[in-house]
Length: 398
Image 1 (tube, one colour):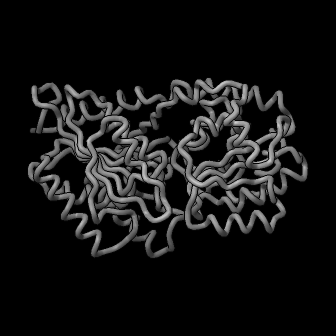
Image 2: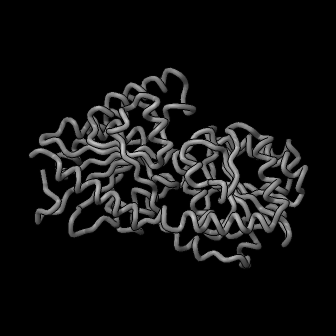
């Protein structure tokens, strides 16, 4: 096993099921491109995004990560494709001969760790949970299969990483592995563009606000995420009805796409939200969008550590979210308001409260920026992972 102090760089094979635009894609791109080149040689394996998802493969290229796309790897359950993806991964491992295999997301974690266990010498095996699919994503049978897989692989992994303490606590409670096998390494992001957002709206931001009918004195809520069941945008739309009954100035921008888009647009019309809500699809100008908004909104039933909230907080925006996963590490009593998952009325009341109090909303936004500025910095993430690899390699018995 390579020692981190040896002349040859440590070879790290990082695997993720697909690079759909979102937090995990940013995370692996930063690690793939910014780990010290004098100590590490990294290769990032990924599958293709699903239909209707925006690809984030360019994020890896922009950050200098070496990326290889596998034809059969993907997030959906498919015994034939999964078997072929396993063969593809193992073929890359034989050629690349990694010292460390670090997997991200459930499918890549299963196939990548299984393949690593077949290698001799066996590499260090690390898996990061950016959240989990063990509750709320699938039916009972599929969820049961994933739980068994995670428990088996958890005992064979050298370290399991959670992006928040809440994520780790939940995984321990689900029996994935004992607490001593886990470590918390929070997300790290390139936040400079968001930290540069000021209080004055640019022409581009004013144009975005007009998409939902917002004038200079209106209040705009922003949702960024996939339009899939776990995000519960249906609850958010119901909450907007509750909120607008109390504060008619509130309007909303919905950024993202997915299989539920048409259904959600129909729901918005049926609820009488009309021009007060605009569905914008996938966008890359997220700092501009954060600056155009006044409140960041999240309504999920399950989360890891949501990147959209961190980015809006860095832009100095107040936060309103359901209290799930690692959200409470971002949305504190000083940075926003938390409500129970599925509580449309509670979510609406929280939105109305902040929308109707401009001074309080601004104060909360300033506190949110202070809170996230250093904690979720990309340099901190790279340093934490570098330290983890060094410790694991040092402690590994030759």
